[in-house]
Image (cartoon, rainbow over all chains, first blue to last red; front, side, top):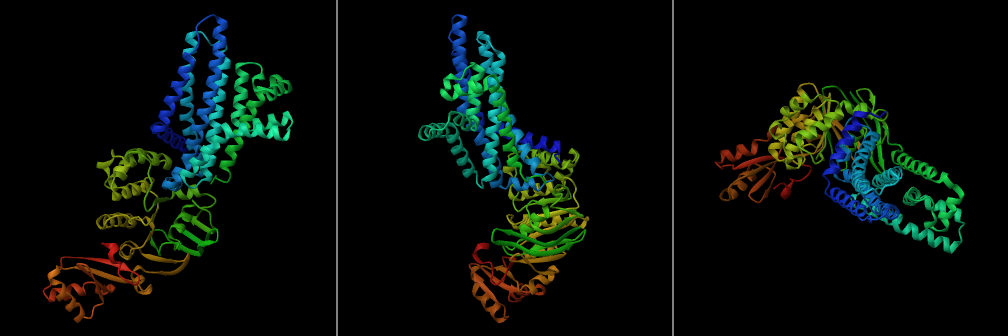
Length: 273
Length: 294
């Protein structure tokens, strides 16, 4: 049984630790700064011009999230459990009247709180600038993009915790996290493209493989919030629009939540005592 | 209060604990004695329910495998070197007090008990080894548990800090707390223990009173005596004449002594008018600890 006061104590400690972490502060400032810079690049002009410019800015923000959020989510998660295990702090914490589930969930919630605060700062600042310029025509769409970024951050953090739970050393956990980041961000895309070309895989299968990657899921859903069609993604995007139509975004959101829940379940497996 | 039955722990092909059984009554102070790798820490971790094992282990009647959290609530744990987070002494105690559901007033009480009140605002990484161990003891005492489990708590402390720490723990034992501790040091076992469980290659090899340990395990105690360089030759002569077994070591001599005759070499040197500059009692299985103790 989970004790909420233990969760609060552990999550609070993790949140304070994250906010004291130099690299995390650097990441927060860099992300917020870049998000603000991108929003400030909206070109002045008529409504039509501002709308086109907003789409480009939103797409740039999506790309920023695609690069930054997985990196910080994976590395923060990977360093957490493995770091504590290496110093002996984890054994000492587990020797207290807490169970493993409370430790793991408390730690996750604390780091997730810090990560979401960073995203809120970046998107919040950018949103204020865009609103002041009168560029946001669809505030709901912008908020949906922020929500998608939150989901991506939580998914990446849980993947990071998964790496951390499996690794014995912090260095190995961080190495694994960086490899996973490279794989998800770069190699995954190239692998799908190469395999598709070499093996003549049906377009439906290509789409299915692509959305198994949380980053692709985020990218497709985010593009859908900016524009109605996925034609910028080529044949796979056209296939998805044609096959699922308006159901695609809800399906992607549901898929993201299910993938996230399964990762959590895997990490927690056999840990409640 | 603590019962272990057929405790077995395997790490792959290595058997760290092999069919170990023992019972510890309330108010006892029991030492786990053994070389590195004998299974002392593994036994204590099984007792805390923080690692899996075969067999049974109950603390206060609670099965640690089924309800480790409740069992740990009855135990205060002091590791060999507690790994604290980057916080101040007070923040550390607040954090662990929250996990142990302890009232804040209790924090000030335990700080006083372990004499850390004056250091409550310091960051933990600024504390000396002895202070860190006293902080770990403070954390262990927060919920006023009936059992204290100490895993070689003085291994990294200097002689004075070791004595102070053992004296502090002995006071808690006299006040009724059950103590389970592991140690390499015979003097510590004698000072604090009421019973010794000797572990050897993961098996319980012997159970005895601390005073019997040296003899039954063939342990040797050595009196290390420092004399001035000018007295070296005459000291050698006196020790030879009196039939002591000894080994010169730089400016000092290791003289083998038994439990009832620790003072004999000092008396012999005094009779010969040889001034002793300092002395210390050290333990060794077969030979004196040698240079590593300098």
